Image (cartoon, rainbow, N blue to C red; front, side, top):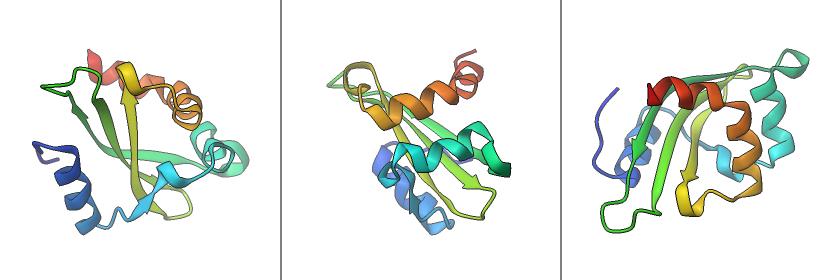
Length: 105
């Protein structure tokens, strides 16, 4: 895993590494079966990065580089703090909370 100064830099570098799917564009009901492991669908977090806004403390996010059991590789950006109220993100991140807890330790 590399260290990136900005979220956009990290997304661009991950795209170069084959993480081309934008999972934020998926409907929550489309992604949740992978997150929950339903019907043999699985999701694996291969890398993740945390970004904290320096001038705007509400601009905090975590970038996940993930791969589905179907072979799709892409990124999922989760805002936290002020901007963390998106319905899709909220459902998915609730299911992925264990990964965030592991990172925060």
